[in-house]
Image 1: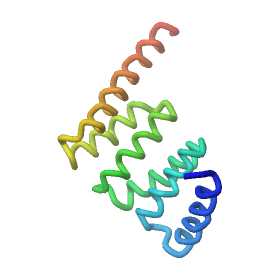
Image 2: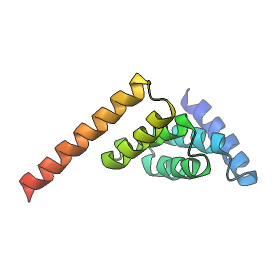
Image 3: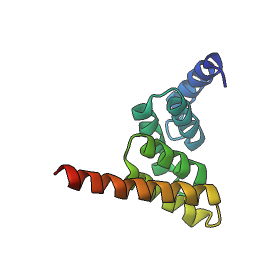
Image 4: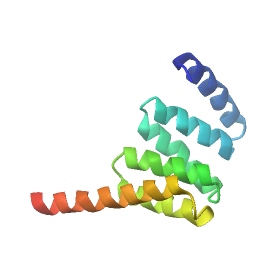
Length: 116
């Protein structure tokens, strides 16, 4: 989606969320637009709310995990990927994202120990 397309979609989603602040689909889309625009903090806000509204929505759990991983919050991302795998256990993309988050989380802890 182009920049103009994202802006237009974002405006529509903002209007929808003003009327229906707990629309999981609108929260998901808004979060994904923010993530693509590099506004990770804002994406996390929308995706966290979406996960709270609909914890069984696989795309929400996966995208929330992606946003958390982008924010270097990999242990939290792993929790979201695990939740997504509970819904769709055979999904190779989710399993790969989980493995990556766990590996990077472990590597980060090892780096922290080396620094300390």
